[in-house]
Amino acid sequence: AEKNGVLFRVLPGTDSIEREAGDQALAVYYATIGGGHEEAGIPGSPTFAADSLKKLNSASKAMGYELSLVVTQPPQPAGRKRILTPTPVHAVAEELEIDVLTPPKASDPDFIEFLEKLEPDLCVTAAYGNFLPSKFLRIPRHGTINIHPSLLPLFRGAAPVPRALEAGVDTTGVTIMFTVLEMDAGPIISQREVTLKGDEKSHELLDSLFDIGTDEVLNVIPSIFDATVEPVEQDHSKATHADKMRKEEGVTAFTENAVRIHNKIRAFAGWPGVWAEFISETAKGVREELRIKLITSRVHEAEGGPALGVHEINLGACKDALRVVCDDGSVLDILELQPQGKKPMPAKQFKGSLQGKTFSRKRVPH
Image (cartoon, helix red, strand yellow):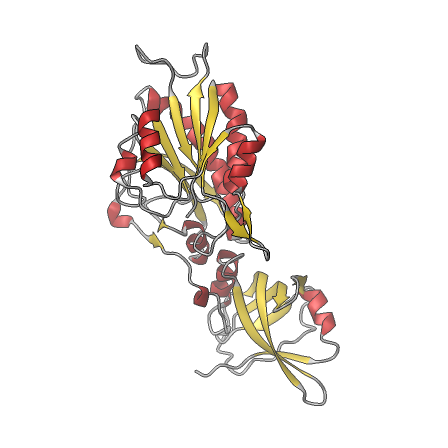
């Protein structure tokens, strides 16, 4: 996971947050962790934390804060030439002329020593799947809070957004909570529900939830400082877990129900993606196996009768899609796809490239 953070200080002469006697300035350490370089374990847009930083920079000025420090993951090799590249958050911080630190870990001794000398009042983390040690958590005077993109205690863990979409939930949301040693198990400060339409993809939803979460952070900070916040303990008996995704999960042979496959396509968008094998055949019997990434889909029929023998795809059945009959008779429309080694394309364009060939999903043994 990646580490990105911002240090806030209250601007002199403001009364956005009432100071305690003897305080010279209040400081808030804000760490949006997980929005640096894109990696397999944390799917989604690598820019969401950078967008959050821009929003916080703008909103904090109106609230009487000054963003004085960003903490982010060290630059990493990127691209074919493996050029050392800073995170998007790093780049935005420099654009905003905010100082940047790049510790290798949250437990880095020099980093911990720096925070101890800084004496921040509050630390905020987001999209951080790794363990925060007690020596980190004990530093902020008002504790550490976390932006988590699910309605806790549901979907604790590293991949809450993909796992929620994979499960086909109708409602998800964002939780702001106090961080404790057990991952995602701390008392809840605030929650915002989001109703899903059924076509959201993981990276799009992640961006949206962190945008909402940023607003919630700004909403709850005053109550934390004036001690009016009333956190509520989670019902740990209802906790579910969102494990990191594995590459081998992104494979389908249409042996599952169309709804299940559609939800996997949404959940695994970006990485690992959902791949399927097909066969094209010319009129002369020349066959070619094709491995294709399924990018966008819709459910045509959620239920049907057993259809184990239906493998050929009727290319004329739907103008804008490849209409695939699954083994249980449910029907999935593939709207956008990407043949291996090629760019993504609409299904209509792909069908045109077949030029009179028949097309079928590959048979698998049962």
